[in-house]
Each structure stands twice: as C-alpha cells, then as structure tokens.
Amino acid sequence: MHACWNCGEEVPEDAKVCRRCEADLKNVPPITDEDREAVGAFVDLLPEEARDAMRELFENSDTAEDFVNAIMVGSCPACGGENVGDCEKDPDYNDITLGRCFDCGTVWCTDCEYVLKKGETVCPNDGQHTWDDLDLDPE
Image (cartoon, rainbow, N blue to C red; front, side, top):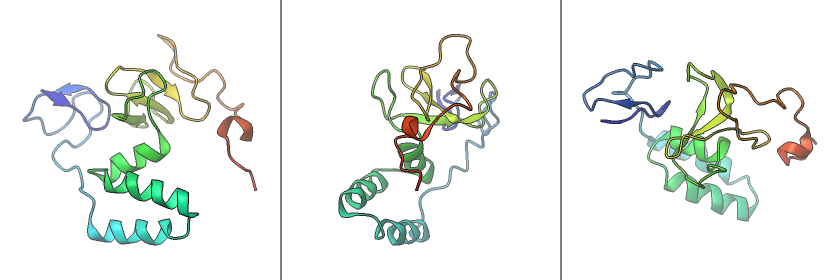
C-alpha cells in the first residue's frame, strides 16, 4: 500500500487509479528539462533571497506537483510536515484553497491558515479573506 499523490488515500501498490479521487496513479509526470528552464527564467526575475529559496524548493521537488504544493500549500500548520497537497480533486472538499497534510491528516485554509474542525468542509472565513490575511501587497 502507498498513498495517492493527489488525496493521500491508501491504495494498493499496483493500483492504476485512486478509488477515492480517481487520480491517475501510473502517470505522475516528472519534472522535465523544459520545466526547469521555464521555472529558471521566472526565478531569475525574483529578488535574490526569494530566488534562492525558490531554486532550493524546485531542486528538492521530485515532481512539478511537489513544487507547486511547496509554494501554494506550504507546510502543515499542525505538524510542520511537507507531505502536503491541495484539496482541488478531493471529493470531500473539492477546493483548491484547502491544504491537506498526508502525514497527520490536518486540513486547513491556505488563505488564512484556519485549521478545519471535524465535519467542516469549507473555511468559515471563505469569501472574507483580506489582503492582510494573505500577507500580500495588493499592488
């Protein structure tokens, strides 16, 4: 058994599709040289400190999905784990703005880091996030 790359469901080693979210388990695309060049061109536009952090994330990612999760989802607010993904294709949540930790099972809002309680399927702050919550400059 191993975890589905998309939703974290335990699936048999020989499974072709996740029985929970229907993710293709045999065709997880690796990072290509073309991907590396495109990201490199973008990263060169960033300030040096951000560029170094972005390159380190990219070099330590096995797949493009891992790289995107490191940036868009971040680490788990409960356990600090890096084995995370979004809930875009998760049938229980179907929300790209929710993150899930495949290690401890925590689900949280990636906009405001609210940790969902048992039974919650959406962030109670949904639609009310502000630029301050996102820690971004709106300009």
